[in-house]
Image 1 (spheres, rainbow, N blue to C red):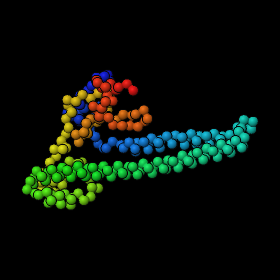
Image 2: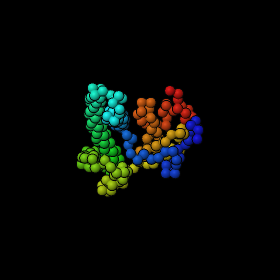
Image 3: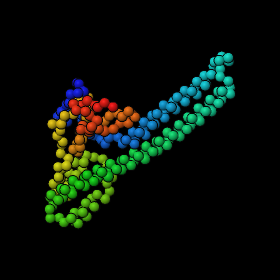
Image 4: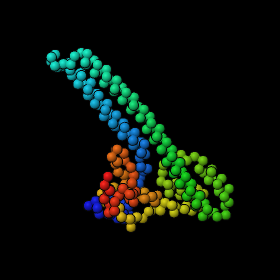
Amino acid sequence: MSASQPVTAPANPAASGGWHREAATAPDAQVRLAELQLRQLAEIREVGMRVLEDLDEERDKPIEKRMSVAQRGATFDRVSKAIRQIMALEQEVIGMREKRVHKVAEERTRTRGQQVKQSVEQSLKTARPGMDRPQRERLLSDLFVDYRKFATGNIPDLIAGICKDLGIQADLSLWEEPNYQDIALPSGYDWIVPVNGDKPYTVVDTPSGIQVRRPFDSHHFARGGAPPDG
């Protein structure tokens, strides 16, 4: 299919090709950068290890072709020190990555909890219009004292479960299936249509090697779907 020909996202995600429903949050940019740095450090470390292997093989060469003992010793010391420094950097980047992963997970959990709370609050307003605001806020405060229980699971199911326990009808209007049937998506990309109603987007690699999300209406896509020059 020509990259200049747009495609239209059908209403039924399960029956379409080229895009899918979002199953998980896209990787954090800082986490991806740390993983890229770890791969690069590992490659450099492997180069150093090969240099040390080559030094070890010097002993099997004829005497007239060997490096001098002083040269081998100096090279070994220099490369070994570089490898130790690289390994220390790897440990530092791993620590930074794990801290970021933990922070992103906490932020995601808090966001999910707030989304569930918003829908439950709307459900309460609809089902019990006579409940005054202070009473409703006290109830919500008790229900959402700890967001960690919302870290996993399908959000509409979590909302429905809480509303069932409260004996009210769940208002899931915020979580209805999106319909992008009339949106022309540039072809040649793997499009993702989030179930929360966000714009369809694709993940692309930048010249620096970092992956970024770009919505279908980004200025990076020229008219007709072809990426702009530069």
